[in-house]
Every structure is written in C-alpha cells, then in structure tokens.
Length: 625
Ligand code: SF4
Image (cartoon, rainbow, N blue to C red):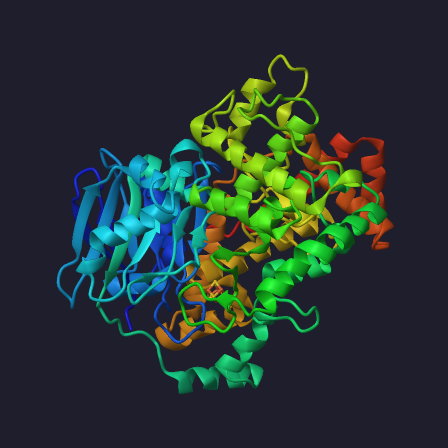
C-alpha cells in the first residue's frame, strides 16, 4: 500500500506538468496536503483519500481545496463518487497553478502505466453553454463527445457553468458515466464557489479524466469484517447499512433521504419566505408546515420518489442510495429548501424547474437559493423595484391567500428570471465581487442596508456564505470554514462558549472524514473506525490524528470572522433562543440569562454571544505544533 501521495501539478497557461510525491510523514490526505499547497502557491487542488478504491463504502469522494472566491478564505469542498475514476489515473491529487489564456478543457488520461497524457484544449464555452441541454449539462455532453472515445474505461468529467464566470459562487458538477451513458445523477462540489475559482483563476471550464491504472487498494473483506465485529459486533456491511438508514429509508418516518427526513421532522422549525417565518408564532409555522409541506411538498416527494423507489448512488457502490430522484431531477434537502420554501415555493414541479435551471447555470444551489430568496424579499417589501433587478414581476408571498401550485410556479419563474439577471447583469445586478460588496454599494443613499434582510455569515472584508438550512445558532458560528458541517447544528441549546468548543470538535471530526475522502453520510462508523484502520494498514493512527489537530489549528489561524452584519442574522439567533424556551420548554439557566440580555439590547447581547462562541472555538483549536 502506498505510503505517499502523488501529486500532478499542471499549469494550464502552458500545459506543462510535473509530478511530486509527498510521504506520509506530514500530509496524509487531500485536505492537509491541499490546504498546504493552496496556502503556499494559491493552487486549486483535486484529491482523493487513502482509502479510494478500497472496500470501505463512501471512500471515493473527490475533495477540492483552495481559496474560495465567495468565502475569501481557504476552503474545502467535495463531491461524491468522483474519486473512483480519478483513482484510475494513478495519482492522488491534481494541483492547478496558473491560468489558461482562454476557457479550456483539461484532458487527463493514463493507459496501462504509461505516462499520463495532459492536454489543455480551448473551447467556445458560451456557444456550448447555450446549446443542447444547456449549461453544465451541455458542456458535459460536449466534452464527452470530444474525448470520450480516447478512454478504454468510462471517464468522469468535472464542469462549470456560466455562474462560475458571473459570480463568486459557481460550483463544480459531475455525473457518473457508465458504459458510455451519461447519467442524470449530478453530484456537486458546490459550497465555496470552487467552480468560480476553476474558471476565473485557472481558465478551466471542464476537466475530463480517467485511465486504467489499477492501484493496490485495500480490499480484504475478511480482515475488515474482523475489525468491525470487534468494535460493533456487526460486519462492515451490516454496520454501514445501520448507520446510513436516514439517507436510504427511515421506517420511523416512512420516508428517506435528507429532504424526506428533515421535512417530516421539522414541524415549527420550518423556515420560509427568506426566513421571515422566524418572526411568526409557532402555531402559524406549524400550520404552514402541515398544509404546505406535509400535505403537499413532502407528500409529492414521498409518492413520486420514495414509493417509486427512484434512488441512485453518486457513482460508487453504496447501500445508502442517497440520491433521491424524480426522473432526471435529484432531490437533496438544502437546495430544495433554499429554492423551495425559502423562496415561497411549496410544489415539487415548481421547485424542480427552478433547481434545475440554477444547476444548469452552474451555481452553488444553497447560495443561489439564499440569494434569490433575499432578492425576492427586497422586491416584496418594495426596497428594490423589478426594474432595479431586471425583472417584471414581484413574488407572491401572502400566506393567507397562497395557492400552493400556482403561486409556487409564479415564484419559481421569478427565480429563473432573477438568475438571468445575475448572469446577464441586468438592472443594478452584478454579483461578480460578491453580494456583500454589492449590498454596500447599492445601500448607499437608500436609508436602509439591503443586507439587513439577508441571512449570511461574513468573513474578512467581502467574504460571505449562505448558512446551512437549520434554524440553530451553530449555523452562524464564527468558524474558519462555514457553509458545511464544521460546526454543531443540532437543535439543542448550548451556552455559546460550549457551542464554540463543540463546533471546534465537530470540525476536527469532519476533517478526519474529508482528509480521508470519506462521505460524511457514513460518519456513524467512519469517524472512529478509520483512524484505527490508518493504524492497522499504515501504522500511523496517532500521527494521522495529530495531523488533523495541526490542520484544524492551521485553518483556524486563517480565521477572519466578522460579527453578524445583518439584523436578520441577529434575529435568527434570538428567535432560535426564544423558541427553545417558549416551545421546547428548555429551562437551562444560561438560556434564561441570554434571553434577558437579548430582551434588554439585542445587538449588544448578540455581540457577547458571538464573542463567547469565538472564545470557545479559539481555545479548542490552538494545537498548532
Ligand atoms: S451516501 Fe450518497 S453521496 Fe455518500 S457515498 Fe453513498 S451514494 Fe455517494
């Protein structure tokens, strides 16, 4: 088994490339090495973990590291399954330095141990994005037509869309290809805008890769079962089946996947209409949840997707089959939340239409949906006019008169029009330098801060991130990487210092998964088991865990957190705390104290709460050496 990582460095400006090996004495995976390279030479890195190609389920994630255009800090993003084919290249990481002169495809192929073939081929990307299935889907088809026949085994293709050029939150999309057939199950490295980094900083619109190299990966089922039986009294497959129930089918709720289980269980924690529901009574939120989610949005999903068993994997063999489909529409909770209830959409047809368009244009769906909901809010309050935003309609957000199918459809059409405004820079819309800077410029002279109604986390001078879709204080924690699950997002009240400490702990646990290229849906066993396996196979359990602490400290040393700039951020945390007391009847004495502080002066209380979290984070991540 390899005790090193082999990195292919490519400069798209010249097509020059070289390889270098990094031993397992300092860097153990795609995150610690990728962050080192990104920090040192501002590269964008695509890597797989030590268990890629092994028998461990979920071990073929492709991990992207680099400087995030929207967050403006070092970032880690990942996509499922794309590491499986990457492993056939016989390298562990691709590192891009430099920029192609015009938008290009990077072609990587390696046949039977021969030297890797590297080509940088310019393409007419605008024409392609407008053709056929449009956007990322058209580019996938085009690149496959251009290069597919050169591969002995099915390749995989990473692509970006026009959103990567026109915004700082463009994602990277990829679909499994099997026997020459391009599937409909798209997987994304969406968070962090790594598509924007790929396109804008490196001039690469697509990467096609594959090969026939067979690595010596760990595939001894008997040995693995022995480890699992010792720890769990279950075989590997049995433990994995148990740990991934939520993502497959949860009998308790008669649904499955993140969309199914989250909507079945959230009740009064529903967030809709750009989070305005945080100001509603619990009764009103429960009414909305019952009438529009349980009786319609979730019902459609259960009848069409769950009952119809329309499910798939990201491309690797996996019993979780977490990709819940309806025809060619893939349904995850967060995109169908931001481009669902958050935009005033409660009908699957309408949500499918908007989500599909946003995906085709190559935008990170969570950020995209959050931005659309904010723009709709600004239209609904009359703060901005349709002309300002280059559209002709305003949203229909009146809950009393809401017609679930028609008004959802209307709001989805408006969402699509707003995406066109973003991509074509209509009216005053121009998000190339991020929404915070845009808001600062266009708030001037209006007597109102446009961003006061946007829920986001601020970082440095202009970095921003739409939070994960859970109404909890941890979703807005001042962690060094936000927008993924490097924080605590359970619905429990924790005093802020403890919340910071526990978020730091979650960051380390998630880094174990990311640095091994493991899908977090397998975290029920992977977090504790795989460091042990690193010890069994490579004899480096303690060194690996030490490297995780150093990595967490290194990332934290780059933290530039900014106190919640938006009033809705403060209200988001305040109303979460109020709900904990009033609805969940949490009697924690610290909760009482914080509620009193917020009642006296919400801005001062929010500052104290935020700084307490930051203290908890910093005191837990100081293991730099
Ligand atoms: S849980 Fe989903 S994303 Fe993760 S490995 Fe399985 S199919 Fe892929």
